[in-house]
Length: 409
Image (cartoon, rainbow, N blue to C red):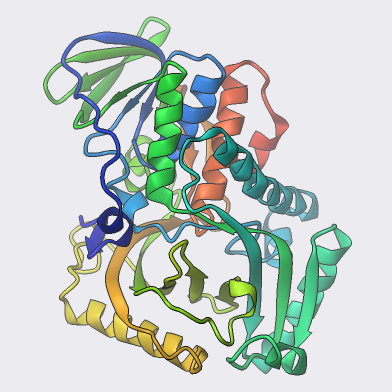
């Protein structure tokens, strides 16, 4: 399957800052993190900082999997709005999930302060809008609920939005906090660099082909036959994490993304905020640290592993059509931005759960495994939460928030 396809922005504009050796001997660790993308990097950061003897094992190059196709939108909002999530998991858990996501944005700010690379991290605002009259009442109710629980929000109607944005909308929730952007590739490497300085070990180009239980721990076997013994295995993979659990945890889609060349003036784009519409298959937009527009969406369900969408190449007519739709949307939304020129086109496979929440914790059949499965548009935010909760779990604290993200929820 093509986890990512096309001309990838992050790995094109950034050189590989650090290279790590492959495993060439039998070793022992307290925790082995399988996966060297943004998920594994965040887990390595928090576990190493806590003094846990940890190793990261990546079958390819650090940050070259799904992380390389991430739009890295950081915000307290999730795929389900607060009203929708309330109907699925109850009001208390819905509010807790939103507040954990809001906290995670500022936790990333705190992490950045510890890193040598600031990774183009920029705090900002976000817009959740509709151009459908039928959605106005829902957005009004959503706004009142968010305001009731302390989120810093403003309601925009058709008229008040005209002064801020060049595209029409019937209503919107403008959030004045709880949003940010970052370069996920540089962030992954900076996190791992920090973890290594704290004692973590990283193995690139080291594929795990088998695992088995032994005494009170697990043994991981690499393709070259070397063994890693560990008390716990932390699964920090996206698509490949499914093979460990029988539960149907996520539906996978291919999402398409365009990135422009740097733009001089963002006329009609208030505060350069993150933008998302209310459509089920929504379109999202953000501005990068070097002033490019990144627009994504037009998701297609993957189907089987041998399906066309699973293995879609960038030159396929389906991909070209999706890119054309996104470019037309961008130009129609911002007619006053005159220097729009598309430079990168790529797509990636991403998972989404029924309630839009991640799976974090222990799976009943695998007591020596931790899972950090940050499926959904809020993947990086979810992985910050997951890394913190799994660290606390490993240290014997048993955080109650794990119930919100449990496999048994």
